[in-house]
Length: 266
Image 1 (spheres, rainbow, N blue to C red):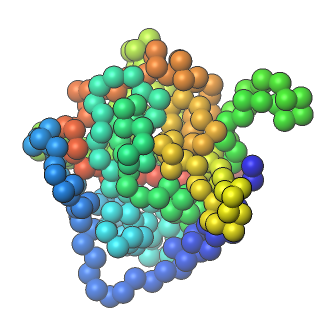
Image 2 (tube, one colour):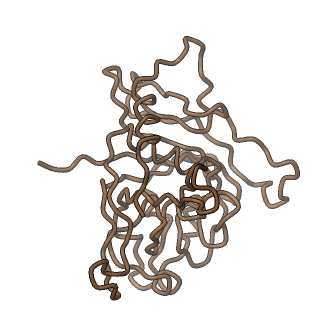
Image 3 (spheres, rainbow, N blue to C red):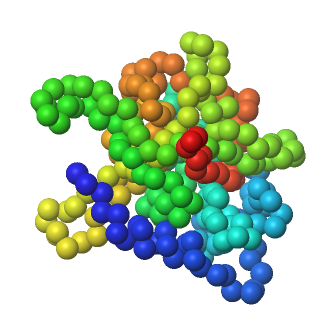
């Protein structure tokens, strides 16, 4: 099913040309607290100040909550986006790295409470090109055939506090391959998920499928916004990939997830 890009492109253009108001922006705003905090959250680390690649850059707020930003250079180029997430799992097998809140917390390290369609638009504004999700069937023969996800390579970093110290590193370091005893050794690509139309209401806005849980995945999903460009089945992920517990801050800690498109080498 083809993804309708027009609305996202408009969002991306508005992000790229948006000039913020002169009022100061609180870049370390905390996500809204749950009405009844989980008792396990007593050790959770707070969200640190949002980082910049260069002190001269601007952080452009992309939502009212102050939990989603684009980083813009003095020349007006958006170089990356960042969104506040929450640690939802520290140990056990993984199929997903980042899920949408209230979806796949049982198999993801981080959950995000921002519409994945807006993250998609932010990546477009930062210059990323959407590719295609993982294919499991040859469209010409209708026979089973693996086709890797494609799209711009995306550098995925996490910025957070643990034991009172500030850390920034690749998201792969939180994912442990129990067979190789090494972190996840591949990158993510901007597959772009799919949009699903409601057959009972064709005029309704299509549903952006990665909101069902697959925002950034470890095993291959056709609904993934960011997927790995190698074959990792659900069974392989469940057997081989686990959360690297000692690297991850306590449950419910707030973390900046940073997504930066990597330009192709010419």
